[in-house]
Length: 209
Image (cartoon, rainbow, N blue to C red; front, top):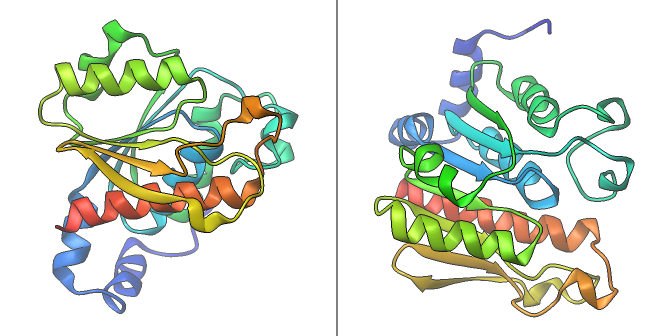
């Protein structure tokens, strides 16, 4: 990829909008995104645009045509591993971002090794049992990690129902808490994007607190 901007120019643009201490905190931040679908792919893009310097991306899947209605991928990414496709997109936003990629299906045994060095983890898995497994294991095995989880963003109801709630000291849950794709209402880009925005915003708040 040809880069038509220097790192110094990119940093000056950030400096023009935020105090230097914000830039330094964002650049030093280490955030993991577990699951790179509708939530995770959008969260990663928002965090990259916000200046997060280190992102850990995990997903086992490849980009499918059914993903294009709500995920941050394009037709040219079809068939590519989501970790690689998303890494390409993030490097087009910030060529100097530090990325750690894991193309794998995460099991309970993997979690401590994968995430113990990341103080913030965004849980963005699709299946309820996998979501619960990740959150439970992080709370039990990674005592220095705070989790931001997504739960309830299906359909096309009023987006004002999506909110962020602190459930435990190290767990925040974003969503409406009720809607489920299994109810037959599907997943639409607007509400998925709103929930992803809540999750990314909570991560930024936690970095800068």
